[in-house]
Image (tube, rainbow, N blue to C red; front, side, top):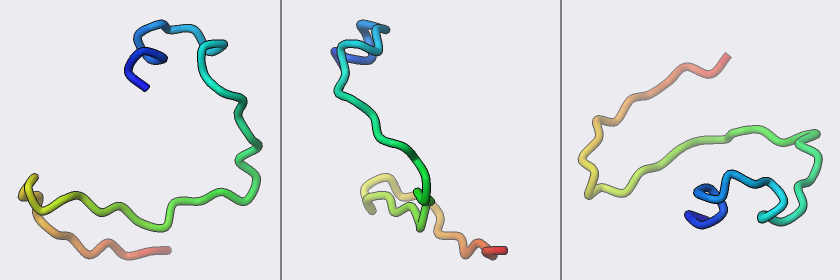
Length: 43
């Protein structure tokens, strides 16, 4: 992944797919980062 990003050339990566129907359900970070936990209201 790092090599792809550093190349700054989209052709170095794989094909993409349509984001139709794609949505973020949640984000969880490893405890080692010691980030505060927040409950976010979903609208």
